[in-house]
Every structure is written in C-alpha cells, then in structure tokens.
Amino acid sequence: MPNMNPKKNPMPSQDAQVRSRNFGEVALGYTEAMAIDEAERCLNCKNMPCVSGCPVGIAIPSFIQKVKTGEFEEAYRIISESSSLPAVCGRVCPQETQCESKCVRGIKGEPVGIGRLERYVADRHNAESQKLPARVPSNGHKVAVIGSGPSGLTCAGDLARKGYEVTVFEALHTAGGVLVYGIPEFRLPKEIVAREIDALRAMGVDIEVNTVVGKTVSVEELMREQGFEAVFIGSGAGLPRFMNIPGENLKGVYSANEFLTRVNLMKAYLPGSATPIRHARRVAVVGGGNVAMDAARSALRLGAEEVSIVYRRSLEELPARHEEVEHAMEEGIQFRLLTNPTEILGDESGFVRGMTCLRMELGEPDASGRRSPVEVPGSEFLLECDCVIMAIGTSPNPLIKSTTEGLEVNRRGGIVVEENTGKTSLDGVYAGGDAVTGAATVILAMGAGKTAAKAIDEYLSK
Image 1 (cartoon, rainbow, N blue to C red):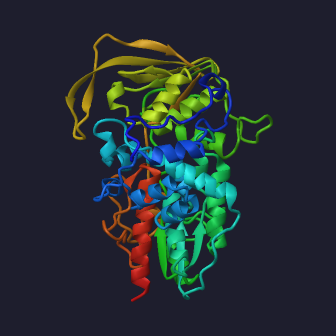
Image 2 (cartoon, helix red, strand yellow):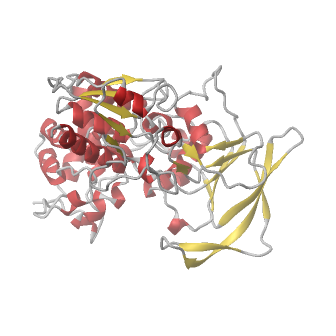
Image 3 (cartoon, rainbow, N blue to C red):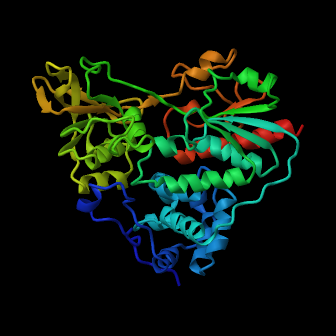
C-alpha cells in the first residue's frame, strides 16, 4: 500500500544559526529509510504526469519504484538515461514548478519529493561506485561545444555516448560554467560538479579551458580550420544588468555575477586571496530571484551583520525558489519588499554609504501577468549600507554574436534558433540554454542541450 502521508519527508539540514556562518552544504540529504518512505508516497500513475513537467524527460515513476524496492543503482541507471547531471539537478532544479507541480499527490497535500529522491540516488551512487563510464568507439565525426555550463555539458555527454569526438571550449580556468561560478558551495558542493565532469572526460570529451571563443578562436575557424563539422553554442548569459541609477560606479557596488564569481570560483573569502572582496557590515541585494538569494546568503557567510533583499514587488511575486526564500529567512536575511532603489550614495572616499529608496504598491498586472509596482509619492527613505549587489538579471554574452558573421540574434541579444532543433541561422551551428533564452534554470538549459545533441546527430548522420 502507498504511504498516504500528505506531507513530504522533511529534508535534514544544518541549523540556521550555524550554517549562516559557514559554506558547508545546507541540506544534508535523506537517509535510506527516509528515501524509501518518501518513494512509497508515489502512486505510480499510469499516465505519469510528472514526466511531462521534466525538461529532460526522466522516467520518474520508474526510478522511484526502484527506490521503493531498494534497487538504488538501477534507479541511478534510469535517471542517467536522460540526465547527465543527476546529483546537480537533485539540488538546484526548481522541482516545485516542474515535475512536482504535476504530481497527483500535490492536489490534496504535498507532492512526492522527486528532487530529494533524485539527489539521494545520485549521492548514493557517487559514494559507492568509483567506476566511471566507458568510452564509446569513435564514429569519426568531430563536434565543438562552446561553454561548459549545463547546456554544453549535456550536449557533450549525449553526443559522446553516440561516439562523437567532442571538444568543449571554456573561457574560464575551471569547467562547469554557472554550476561553479554562480551557485554557492552551500547549495551545490563543487566536488559534485567535478565528479560529473570527470565522468564526461572518461567518455572521451576533451575540455579546453582558458579558451575564449570569439577572441582566441572564432566559430568559423573551428569549422574551417580545426575540422569540427558542427558547433553547439552554450555560452550562457554572463552580461550583468544594472538599474542605471546614480551611484552604480561607487566602490562597493557589485553585479551579482562578479560577487558570486569571486566568492565561488576565486574563493575571495579566504585570507590572502588574489581577488579579494569587500567584507561589508550592511549589504543590500537588489533583486528577488535565486541569484539574489545566493548573493545575500553568501554575504551573510562573509561576516555581514545585516543583509537585506530589496525587491520592488511583494512576497507573492518573488521569483526565487520557495526553499531558497525559506532558508534565507531562517538565516536572518531581511526582506525589504515593495521597495525600489533610486540612488546609491557615496562617502568622501568613493565608497557606498547608503541607498535612497521609494516605497511601492502593486497596481495593474504587467505583460507577464504580474502586478506592476507603482511608486508611493513622498515615500523616499535612506537604507544604510556599505555594499550593494545588483541581482536584477543578465543578458546573453555578446562576444560570439559580435564575432560570428550571419548569426541571427533577437533584440535581447539571444541567439535565434529553431524551437525543436536548436539550429541557428548558420549551417551546422546550434545553440541552447541561456545564450538563447537569457538567464533561466539549469534543467531548462540541459533540456536545450539534449535537443541540440539529437539534432546534431541527425544532421551529421545524413
């Protein structure tokens, strides 16, 4: 009989007061007993609605049934048929708006903890198995992948499984893209990303770091001079946006991209770091998405006494994952909602000393369906802070589009592709992930990588 408990097994985690001052992983993972008990909540629906909510089409009921019977390695095999990064997705995917949103158990209670089970299965496999995947014999075709984020790694993995000789070109000195520079250690330990990348290398994927496509080599040169028959562009959305208000050039103002890259990739919080970061007392993070939560929680762990999320809409419109918001609140992050910055103020030395803000109220819905914020006249006030982090979004990296003749882009800078193939305006060139959509989720980027890999295989198999 199924476990009809209306609530998920809670996720064990570090105490909020303890974790707010360390970079150790917050969520500690299920035990075996908890995983089996949670799997028993699955009704194994015949029409499998949860699968329709998964961008990479994992056979969710099938792997959960294996968890029920304790066949954890078989569960891992099922997940791995569709996902190249199961330990990553189990941690950072917004399951509540994807697979779990379709779960029948969510109608009268909480959905099955699909993401938590995926994490458990992947972590158990990684702890018990040191065996890396075997290399598939070459089929004689070469494909270049630009960017080693989730879309690029997924595309590379799917093609390597079919025997393609794949080379991934990464601009930074470490592979992983947003998984290593954007997501903090307390949400996604970097050793997990490194293991997933090691598995791709074992499959024959070559990863060239410190290679900026568009500077050191062009897309045209990859195809004309280096013999790559197809190229996948997964260069992400690394261009930060700002509000264009006075004071954004003051010392102590960061884009979330820079701040998180310094913390996550460059380890700027360590003594003697070559890329230091300001250890502020009062930090204001402008924005309400997952990146804003990551920046705010990282600032707290760097020793800030007070960290505020400044967001111009209400809590109901906050786009960050519910779990991340809850964790931030538990850790003492202040949420200054219905608040919009108008100017950043500096002291005589050019450092941030505060930020003027206006109170807002919600008016009519905008084009996306969210109610538009409207200024409350005469409500201006000063928010004292000595560091401001702008986390209001990013745009696709403009370098490749500016150096690749004939590559069509839209008005937002995203590469234009065919919806079901990822094909660009150039023959043999495909794209996906944030380089196409702008900043989105890891799993959506992975789905785009899978789509492009399938299309590239069909293109080169003609």
